[in-house]
Image 1 (cartoon, rainbow, N blue to C red):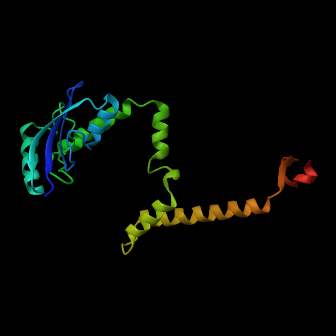
Image 2: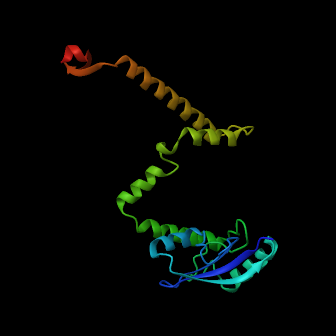
Length: 198
């Protein structure tokens, strides 16, 4: 039977604590997967002390003890803890306090970024046109199969249609101008064969 370890990790340098669970064979080497905790580890290094609180046999047992310690130490509201949700097994439980803590964390994280880092994040975000890869569009289509068309799905279909048309136009233009170069004559772009131009 696989044991589920409920652990408490404490960062030796900063004192920040994290309550988590793992099925890893060595819970001391397991770093933890919380978003705020992971960012903290990346910034300050993995200088961590691990205490095993419980060795649970089932998810129900883990949930019981996870919620017990979450409430005992008030891990969501306390600034001493990196947890954004109570430790309740898979998925956790998002309370209003959890959402507020996540919001504050993200605002603080964002305020520490430089202008170029913010720009890079925007470029990689889901709102960026570069993020609309063929795979992402295909996944969204699959997710919408059988569902009533919404404004978003219509926009997505329109975007895909315009994207495909744009690609076809670029290919056509490349074929039409292969072996040619252009020059401005009387304020207009005129295409010339490279042999005549040179």
